[in-house]
Image (cartoon, rainbow, N blue to C red; front, side, top):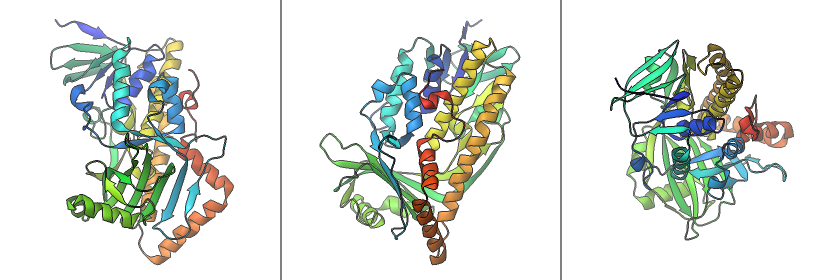
Length: 409
């Protein structure tokens, strides 16, 4: 009979959320198995992922609190201002934090984040990585959880934490239902060089065909100015844009940006993916919880997808740490219910807000545009409203877990 390798919990999924969850738990003395089918050598290759992620100020506090502050220092581009407009028409809205408020967030290249998380997990005594590894069987019950790997290894723990992503097989097997739909949009994602400096400003320009985000990145080694782009186009138009030559695409970019950053050129190959929404009605079951995209997937209109998953990580870590101190089993139903109640409302509100914004700004016509610009101008002139939206951008609203405040558990 195969030897059973036991840890406190089992994390299925070794992407950025799964690795962060493992590191957050390990920082509290909780051991974990992390399982993923991906080969780390391929996942950490230079050209694996050209995308970027906005990490909110509160998420940065958590990453520092679990020991990643030094490794991340200097690798992210601070976001000092967010500039929002309806097309390029007058009536824009800008969010500028006060002198003592710090940055709104930082932009990181996914490949750098993934490498730092993986290396930290591989070096930690309480984290056991199984990558690449395929799961052939999962079992949950009153005594705990077990998974069997394709090589015959049996891993055991008190709780399964599912961080598999949008198409989670484990979520489906557990019978956890999701509400989901597809938008009539695809996101064109890439990075660009541009003539003028971005001054650490993130731009969100709303067009009827979809939102267009230009997100500041650090200059490259040669000193060239760079930004990431997430440009939503209708599904019927997106393929035509992907077929354009690099120069022709850059020309379209310059028009969409109104020339604000001068001449542009592609800094990385473009990619495209369809946009959709999904949200689970239940994020916990017997000895199982969902985190990150396994639980929710939102429109990238506000750049909060990864941060929403990191809020899951912080909340679950606090719940399990509290349970450990009380002597409770990590799969105790009371703990899982507390996590479910804590996270369900927050994720639903963020998901509904991003979905509503996308629909609001997609309404064509001069009247709709005029009303949107009136609303932007009203927020611009109303200090409490601006403060609320900046708090949302920093990830500092709602019932924050302690880690997102940078506090020890």
